[in-house]
View 1 (spheres, rainbow, N blue to C red):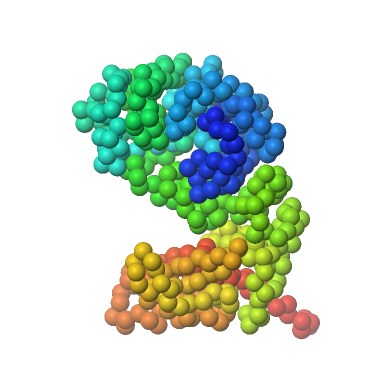
View 2: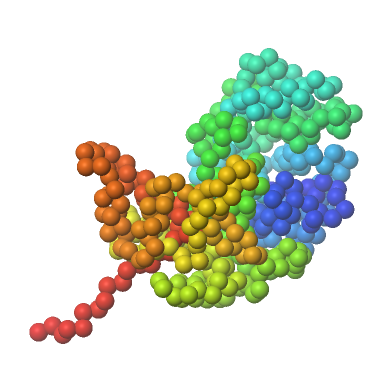
Length: 460
């Protein structure tokens, strides 16, 4: 099956400076670097773009596309908020089975044959709640034309949509029909583009329309995920600490794009795994990445990880340098899965709190009160703040000095009431394990495998 992506620069003067809904413009391009490279590990991928997109993604970033179609400049008369139009246009151009993958989707394994054999393929079915309903109520009164296929949604007889992080299938001819109806939905409302929230309008002429069209055909849709979340309740789609062992697919949709923590992990992952692409982006956006004091390549990255692990011994006064924090950030994406493996195989390892992490009261402006927190120094003279409850404080107090994980669990069990049953004990251990892993992810705890000393007494 043909794997495709699409990018339209929205006819902007300088697309490099546009954030396209992300926390920053830099993270938009980091997303494209990761998405294209992860897809290229498993597939030959084709890009549909415009001239400015070609200049950035191909000429400057040199992303590994197998073929590039510069065909989306003809969309430049559309309002820049209509971000789904390049996808709709791209579907209409397909003359063979295809799967379109968004630029904020990352994979760590091939899609299954079972999924790709479907006439229609999407990420998942979702429930449209009052979240979408509120958007529609603001948009609908201003529209001059709505396709007949939307009648059930308008009459509240349909409350579903398909998430199109991935979209496609073997029935490519039907996508031409869908693209024509979707385009008409947009084009025949051209005079009101400036009167509606165009960003939200995309949801309806793309996701909601597609569901309602497919529903009328009674055709089966192959979904990557069987779960049917609410439209504003996607959980776990930004868990970089769980790839590739626990998860092989991430989609930074919606508010994930604005999350400082998730965008930081995206940045770290790209630098760690694709340093040559990061360096190309860095040349384009030197001011944004000024807090890095070194150049990155595979060898340098390995040195940063090794140096970080070797100097992080308990009791040493750490020089919280730029390189130290970069190495720490690299390992914050690897330690959690190492933790999972060590626990699963009952392998001995030590834990202790990083010496640079402070536990203190921190003023939360949103709550207008002091919150007990772990304060973690970050690159660029910034900090991250992790709120703590009583159990968290107990955990971190026990990990002020190195302790074997097994001994740590035994110590935490002493805080339980004597009459608690076995099920309660197991629940408590699971809670402690979950919070411990969380603190490893948040760069609060250091993990060190305990290596047994070699027996030096000769055998007789």
